[in-house]
Image (cartoon, rainbow, N blue to C red; front, side, top):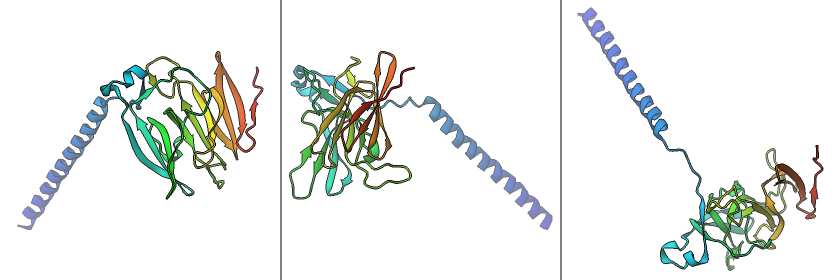
Length: 231
């Protein structure tokens, strides 16, 4: 009797292990099939429209707000859009910027709202522009971050590659402001990107023909210096 019970238990364990193995195989198979048929991710792009199209009800840009975070006493909200109205003439004033995502901005953010308790809010740009990268102030040096005394922005303002959208592939403008978005100033037009390399020191790079040109920008003194990188 005891032998039969042990034999039954042994066979039952084998059946349970077999069923568990089938379940695992099915789960892994579904995951593989799902990954195989998954469409490639495409980051959001902001469509460029002219003023005449913007006047049409169905073409009006859809603006949305989202809370991003807080710097000192200032709360920051991003404004996102699926469309942006192309300006008719280009100027180098600070109306468009690139944002790096220290405060996790969306890839279709076109403006920032700075607001303090009991005070009227302040928009970073008078005219919306695609924020590609944003680096907020950093008061203390850490192992991974350098001190940054002002906000740094990289912004795409014009559809320079004429694909009908504003995205990181368009030429960008580098701007700086105080932590609360005030005193916005343009540093350089037509940049490819930037990188914070030391305390209050930013490496800016752009392209001339097929050559990459590098500059350093001192956040405290506003000094922009071209580096000699000729071969």
